[in-house]
Amino acid sequence: MNDINSTLRAQWQALKECGPMAALERAGTTRWTIDGVIADGSINWLVAAPESFKTFVALDMATCIASGRDWHGKATDQSIVVYLAAEGGNDIHVRRAAADIAAGETGFVMLKQSRPRLDDETGLYWLLGLLNRGPNQEADGFKETENVFELIDEGGFLSPQEKEEYDSLDWTNPKHKQRLEILNNLNQGRVPAIINAAYDGLGENQNYLISDQWRNTENDGYLRLGNIVTPNDVFSRVFLVIDTYSQTSSNDDKTTVSRYIKTLRDLQEKATAAGFTITVLVIDHMTKSGDSYMGSLAKEGDSDAMFEIDRPGNGYSVTFKCKKMKMAAPFEPVHLDLEPIEIEGFQDALGRPLTSLYVTDGAKSHQVRKIAGSDKDTAAALVYRLAQDSPQPLSDTVLRDNYTAHASNQGKQRESVHRQYRRAIDKLTQNGAIQADKHGLLFTTARPS
Image (cartoon, rainbow, N blue to C red; front, side, top):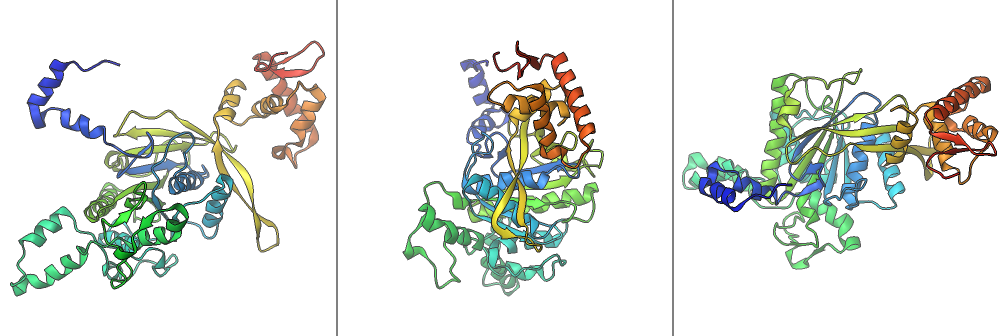
């Protein structure tokens, strides 16, 4: 890495606003919701082809952020999580439960199931209402949003432009009074109800302290800004996930996308005015072939970062990639696996245990696929993994039987499975990934004979 010499620094300083020094210093203060992946206060776009486990990955991110635990080796900035689920029913809650069970801990994640229009003038007010009303907002199922302007009857949001307007108006002028009353209501400086709810759910358990003298019981139980005492200011950050773009907008054209992103920018601006930060992740579809995302290039151009999930073949492994990053250099691909899990104590309508998938580290299985000569979950990759996981070398017959008994081969004809196994062994021995010792037992090249 090249050091910046003192002469160049001095020249930058002399250039003042025309030089990069101020921006470089600001970059040093950037906080990350997920280190090197999602910057605090940014708008991020996650695209994936159908059946690429994008909701599982987004929920995995959300639950890690909510509890403050690392996301696959990357530190998180613990935040309140609001997950707007415009698709699915109870399954979204089952998936969230699976993520919590696998991690052994939980955090504040408010799942709201609705389909608001975020690409028109009602979108901003719907989102403000969601934050202001929090989990107590009356559920509206999947109905189109109605009377959304009633949702901003409480709050603490005033943008810099509105603040400037507020300061310019005269209370003694009857023509200004109505507008002043609206702005004054928005400028009450209250903490949104979602933050109150997070405190009620987490405060006692995690020692987030709010002095009783500052509880404003005369004002609908809202807490005043500036009086929250926390060890890590978790209550000043909200991570908003919107799943999906297609269910919360009218189409994919440039004008609609630009209006949609403006809604999110306006929401962030108002949040900043109210004293907290909102970071957004929008989940979106790629074309069925998976070679490009749907709609306008404005999605990539107007967002701060764009990510892609790639699912090779039909296996349970995916790769999380960076397509665009404004805040830093693009991160290296993150390899993830999905594993089955049982939700103990709960059953479906037929009395069977509830099951789901949870996301786990996939670096090892990715390496296995590379060694097996494919980026997909092939028979060779499975045979190699079974051999590698064995504590001692295996005979050809035992390894074949283990492969045949694997869950992915259940229901298949035995002869067909055996042929797949034989082709896989031939491929692995040809490329040196599996060898036989002097007794004819098979072992991976990673293990000494």
